[in-house]
Length: 371
Image 1: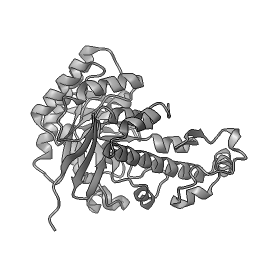
Image 2: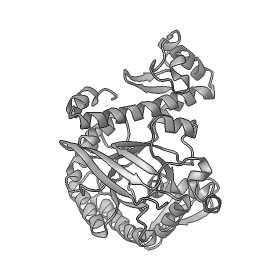
Image 3: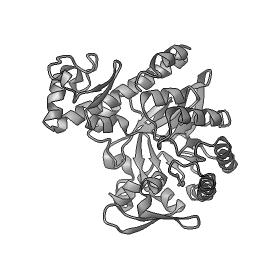
Image 4: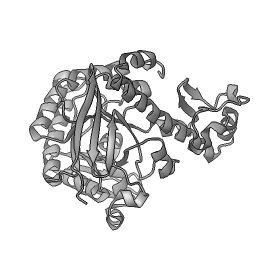
């Protein structure tokens, strides 16, 4: 059976919000879409089958971390991450660019070479070039690959941002060459430029000249205000190709995603649902609930009485409060599952509202609800 080529189409628009569909050889991704983060080949605390039951159609893996453990040799033996972790749907992989920023004390940037790291695990010297990043993503057998970029920390230094654009553009060209002509997979470019409109547009134009299958906005959710993020997205989406996916990386809260969808973004990823789950914070249609709070000690009601996934509707807030207070692993597993399930419900309702042209009503109701 011939594998399907990667494709994207906008099915319907309501103002700038887009209802779309990505087709890959491993399945369809309805957009706007949220991708649970499986950095090391696992969405923390969740079974693969449960992730599927939440309606998740794609997950994210991380090139830098998977390069260190388990490594390309093991991934090659399994034919990629899908079989290794028993996930048969699409996978998108970050390129390692974010770690160049977040682990900056352990690396050195060279435009001609790439990023030279000291492993955060054992201090071993590792060179991550644009070509190596793509080769590792091929070992992972990703369906959507990301170019290696330099993602600066939040800064107003225009020269530093311009230098990062220059480096990222050179690396993007090298990634495109290494990626080759593979129509069954996709390679996304990453737009940098901080909070400056002109630098963002400059970065975008350089990537358009190279021509990618999708375009991502990087360098946000790194400390700027929500309004600054929305303004940056607004300034650039009108110039992004209409017929290609738009991905806002590392975002975020439900209101972050809703505001970005309002400006025409299609794809998101964030560790927040599972990271919050591990700290006792639940996302629900009634808002955020901090289950550590003693007010839930005697609360017999569930987080969501309609959710039968893993019998979540049979666990009371009182019981979850008890699990948290006694440091039981089951607490983070149940709350993380609730949160991923809620995020997917949230995206599903957004898609329905775009289709039915009621998105403005949904937006007005929830844009500040989760702040």
